[in-house]
Image (cartoon, rainbow, N blue to C red):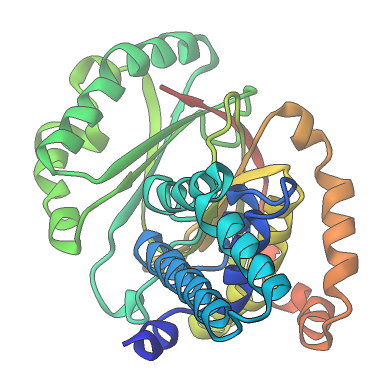
Length: 348
């Protein structure tokens, strides 16, 4: 059974077990560091399975120490040593706290890396991104409307099961060539996403008649989520950087580019403590659109956003040691064209 558990997860359980074991003996190793090692796992269930198996191996080690103590009962010094080891591993409050907190962390927090189905492009989309434009004088009114009416309405849809999640971003600065408000809707399934057309009949783009009068232009993009990850704790005052791209290769080649070139960098930005989360999307039927792919970066604060250039350089310097990553980096200009980036804040 344990061999089956070991084969069902991606990370080396031996390393996690060692971290847990050391954590019981050294105050500087905590459950947070154990969980940070799991950042490349694929969601809550496998993270919990990983830690469960680590705990099993931990208990088995304790049992072996007990057995060793019995076998060498004549050796008083060795017996005392084994008893001390067992006591440190099982009886200490720190050990119990570390194991309990690690398990709670694995189950309670959002999964650090979302698993994307292999056939995500072969089924209906489960995400919509709606971009709204308004005249500069209407921006305060639109913002107030969304905070008081629009977002509560979307949250009622979450409660009813019509949508799975929502995110509303408002551009930080006036830019007549770009959107003022972005609404990202995640649906529980492709069938639920298809039902959005009923909303469109009565409330185009999810807005009532009052709000529609504030808007000058709307664009809706069906999207496929290709990669995403998040740090373990939500940021208090995040700031978003929205980066649209137009890729010039086949969808499969671009998906591989996101996985092998962009994801390692974004994971490094999270590890450096500046990035809270990222999401990478590819547009459906994006021909003729201003962009065909979009990267949503959530920085922890304005301060960490200010560190963006330095952290990018630092992470890339590390990744260049990998020949395969460097090869992709050298030809990235032939893979995609970057469009205008937008700085935005989340409305809640």
